[in-house]
Length: 182
Image (cartoon, rainbow, N blue to C red; front, side):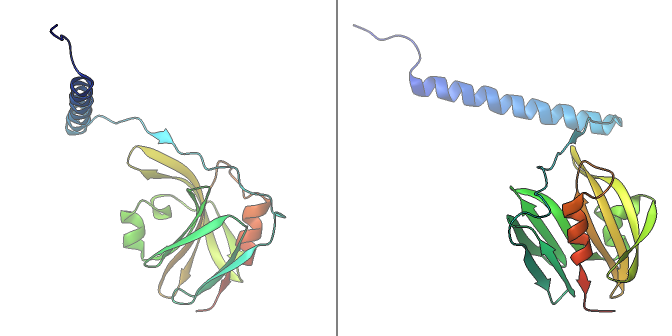
């Protein structure tokens, strides 16, 4: 008896070709749209719910090379990349402390693309407050940034959040910041 039809491997190869062709088609449409000057939709990245201000035992994180310490709740994992420190919570980059010059901040689409909406104090130093949407290609995340001149650059403390004001946990983190350079 002779078998007819497509084998499992044949089906898998056919599906792979269809998916790959769809990926190529989407990239083509995006490229054509960008060349034509149209704008693409952006998706809002929503951070997970912040932990409670009185949750568990907080940890003190220190960056001697950048010159700051900060307290964070349990479950925050720090990653260092040059003068950037990213704190992830449930896998999301929910808090960042960055030391950059203005040109780098502008190139990265940080706070300097906006206008400060107030002034606050961070460890006794005057800081500008920014509320802006940080964009990464097709996504954006609402960000509250506290920026002050520091060590000849700008030190930014950024909270990725859905709100327009700090919640109790975020305020506790900001209040814990200690700077060790002038």
